[in-house]
Length: 589
Image 1 (spheres, one colour):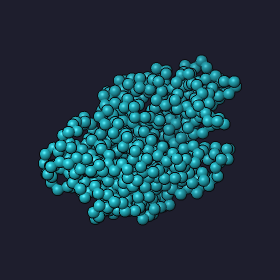
Image 2 (cartoon, one colour):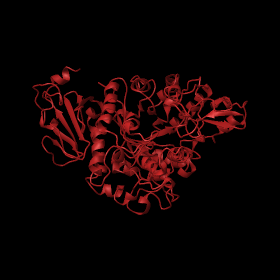
Image 3 (tube, helix red, strand yellow):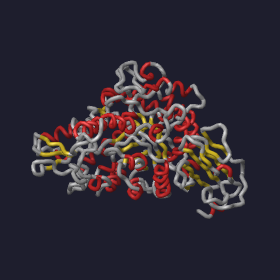
Image 4 (cartoon, helix red, strand yellow):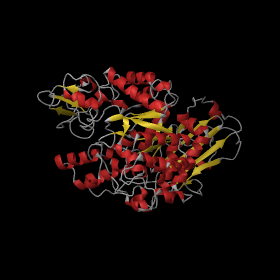
């Protein structure tokens, strides 16, 4: 039996504060706006609120460039506002998880201001400084936001490393004093009463201290820094130290954003012994699923193929079993909207498709994450031009590929941004059909998706058949049925191009899930057979057990079903309870 933990049974809701709710009319979401909408989140039924960064920041990368870890961003409010949010969330049974951004700081952080002031500064070694190589950058590493990962500093004649924006210098985790500063700050927040941390780009903390060139394609200026940065040589040492110094002393939920992580590394980050983190985010299904459609860099405007998505997610389900805990998500603040990316956001299919995707994910093993607006079926935004965009990644990519390199047209790049750009997730939460979707009485910091008059929380709450209430039911089922959190996962119909199906097994129960990812009817015999009848495409082995109760239709996005058929974007989950433990269960224990 899997060890029970509250964070395994929880459902996490990610809030992007800048775009959630504006309480003072300045066009920017804030902490008081979140507090005002706690009843909505409580009604949805989620357990944990993960806040994207709310710390003081110049906002070069929307808060992921922090200038003071113990102060609140002025646009978001005050520390008193945060304390009130924390207290009111706790009073409603909601936990608060903070975004921990410690691979880098802002270049306006006092540590960096001191560090760049002199080669002899006491803070010099808080960051990564290197001498020029032949009068140029120390190596050929690229920034994740285009251009070189090195920036020259006139004051001291050296380069500093920034794997992201030049205003986000990387901290030097080799320096034990840096680590001590980080742990002290984390402890300060834990003593305040927060309930955990989501750790930004945790897989980047440890760098290969040789800082060699990365392999570059012929004619390319920049090479691949991955082998020398991702899952670096001391990363697990650092995280075990963090766990000893801070994490193990509190009842926390921890999840690491681990770009480039593979399953073997994930088993270390999220080991069942609890020595590092509770779980990690991997990106195989979001970054790699449409790899054959790439236009340039990470950018494409195609659709991921379900069989590829299924193969990736099933692999993680099976290989983490009993060894590490997984996280489940379709989208977040760095990804396009789930129903647009993986489903079908056309008006005729959006609701069915959104519910199907929710079913497919939330009934798998792991802790599920909902990104704000996902529970409404919010979609990607039809950005007309670069002037509509605010994301530094999209803006820099357009300049690099269209303006400088001239390898893609401006219209095709905008098509890629409308498909993949991070701003799709960052447009304001759509609360109602009033001006600016009820997000603000002022001018919103980024455009509102024009479909807010049809897609909004007010309309969803008034419609019993809405995506919102479907998510509410999925969350309630996870809380009520241990098989959803702890049952073993087994894939089904792995040769299907259209249906994603699996079963969950626990004690005397089998939960059968099938999801049609297409807009056409698909033959599916799963629900016309006893779940234990022989078939390579169903449940493997004939047994003679009888049901303890009739099969229970747990959830579906259709009110009526067709025998042997899954209707367009249909999702079904059926629970079977047996009088005795079936051989198919006993033999596999």
